[in-house]
Length: 264
Length: 250
Image: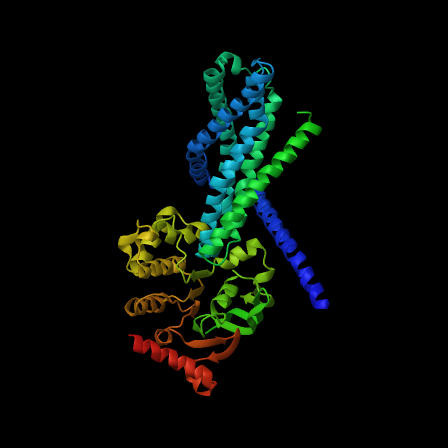
């Protein structure tokens, strides 16, 4: 009976301990990143290199994803409007507002979480299993400061810029579809009448948070890799899952605070 | 030989429920080259990482010049680590840096030297290990032996007071292994404490003045080769058997 009870506790407790230690690991990396930023210990040349890798290398990815999202969203909405009240004047403004507030930052964040998060975890994870991270420590280079801080700054800036670009691309794609399929003129579609400064601020705050947290979550997954190439694979999977989950969770929290506290 | 540079007291290390090191007492003195031997998977590399502060002990402590590594904060650990050079088993060269930058890295991080002096010291140390021509190559363009030599150059470029070698001849052919051990002997400074982990006991005999053998995480022998006559049979069998095997392999 006691053995069965112990097995039961172990079965329930082990995953909880694993999640707890994972969360503490992320918090620890977050605290080290913040400390490094406060001290100004930043390798700016590496920030520029990472900005290129995260930003420029994601342009095609974001263009295709947000372009198709714009096309599909406008087609779905316009089809419904056409059946109920064939007045398309509010479609464009509402679409652009929705893009700013929700879709552009969140989809961009999710895309960066998969493309960049997996890359960060794989790169740092392979450095861990080949003892390069230990070599950094032996040379008195703090791995968080050396590897994660530049990626965090670059990702924060580039996700915000990519979000602005994403709104632009989705709007262009939606505008073209609305014009070609539903005969809505571009001047009617591209109207900022429903977009306020608060919508833009909310979208950019989300982008900033996603960009800040993705390298921290992915970097922690990479630093906790162990056991050779299989360990790197697990770390990469965990980085994608955890950073995507972080994007969804942050989106919910920021939207909630935006609606309830700041009336955004 | 002066006082102990590193002292382990009752050192224990475990991974999950398995104790890899148990109650290890060990002194490493300045001026000596200590050979750490034993069967594979019995805790040698783990002990080396504990000596470097890369792994925290689960029991006992590691003292470097009297300071407990586990009690040092980040700044204290950084200060102590400036004394260290570490040659990793799998080279651990930074694959995104050239050979020049790999070897210059510890000097750039620690020594606060002018760039011209760093360049001169890097070039001189790479010439010492026979790689003066490889300054601008990337690690992926090097052979295994060349990677080991770059690792050795990186570990010794700052003339560290404590040098740790983790299986420096692993995966190398006999000729290259001999060259690596010749370099270890040449790089040894009289004031430095050096620990070499290796299975290549025959070649270790040319550089090591004392041996510690680990078996199942315990120290089963600690002394010079001359003391092996009084050692347990299993230790003598391992020592001379391993040396014999390497002689046959030549």
